[in-house]
Image 1 (tube, rainbow, N blue to C red):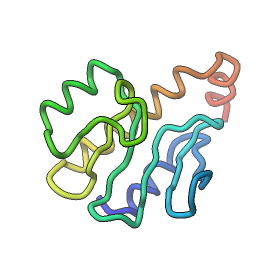
Image 2 (image 1 turned 120 degrees about the horizontal axis):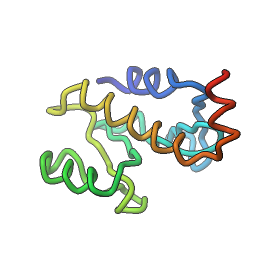
Image 3 (image 1 turned 180 degrees about the vertical axis):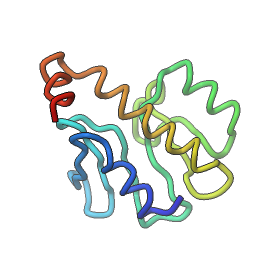
Image 4 (image 1 turned 60 degrees about the horizontal axis):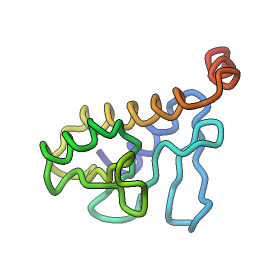
Length: 119
């Protein structure tokens, strides 16, 4: 998956937006103001920080050492840093991005989730 494909996939979700609150080279993808992905899209290898269920995070790190690690500059229990370019199948990367988005949406207040469903 390329950086352009990652950006397009992150922005394909309902109400997803790209922001640059830290530095211009760090893309932050949000849904209704809540972060679900962060990436230095120009870095090589391409990596993305994604929210993850804590049990799944540990399992994924064990299954993919060197490719999935505790979230860089994030809460290590709830975030993973995923190396997008390389050995991980694009399908798995897409699933992890979608899981991150879904976890963030699930944590939104009910009224905001309903607003997303109508959009």
